[in-house]
Length: 420
Image 1: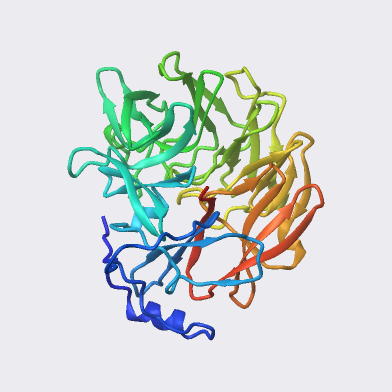
Image 2 (image 1 turned 180 degrees about the horizontal axis):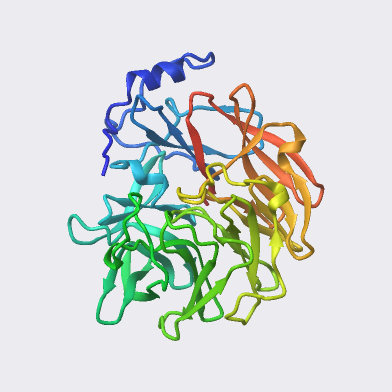
């Protein structure tokens, strides 16, 4: 596990950020204050940015804004809020909900933090055994039970020929308390898996990779694939009772490829206002598709398969043999969903708009997709001259407008969220 020194920002990083005008000082905001703290008026929104490059350590900052559509320039220098004890994996094994940021530290700690008076403050944490990855959060779902997440660790049970991966349910109403930790039972594949060197993969080494996760109507659904080396063009989905984890059922569909997405925070699935659950697939030739499970059903709908091959690769890093790409899909309203840079009518299988066609910049993939009122979709744009903007797409008006600009010295923006 790679660790970063968050008390020292690299000279190269600061030189890059400071090279642009309008920045008066490049000293970091002090971590300690002498005397009593002056209360800071909270801002409504958070923009999570990454700074760094291949020759320097990455650093993570949260920029706050009262209005995402204001014509202003934000920079991590002096105004960026930096969490303490953040690791390289902060963007991957993390979640943001209700103004709270949850992230895994070295796989055995999950810290709950929020911004208080302009600084991150830990509200609570849960701890597992040292040198474990039990608390490495993969897919997450927040519901009335709290934070639900799939653990990184998987264990093969030779007695039952089952691969077990734990589902944690964590009470997050105050600090953090583990309510339950129970194993989801994945069947071992009937076909052989192979390593990079061509040798057969041992069952105990099979890595279950969840790509989508939802909970609805007393059932949980986990889209997954067994291994990213072996080329199997079949979508697998596990359905089971929630929270009992009983009545496990394996769903399979070979029409459009395997389930798309990676194991971390990004979402490759969504539920519409009819209660129908949609999830994306990707084929061997990197073409996307869309399948669904109807409300109340525990079978993949045999009457629905939306081939998105004409859109090409809607994920920035989608490739067979990698992690099938970062997906950031979100449901909006009236059958419209956001996939890649596209607004799509998923019920009628029709592309409504490519947001890149507005000419304001290219939509950047993020870990989360932030929406308001099921109508206002906030996206990250990057222009040809490397300027970064937050933009709002109005679903009803079918318009895209740029708002806050983020300093061009950053490496990327992982998510947008609401603080309160």
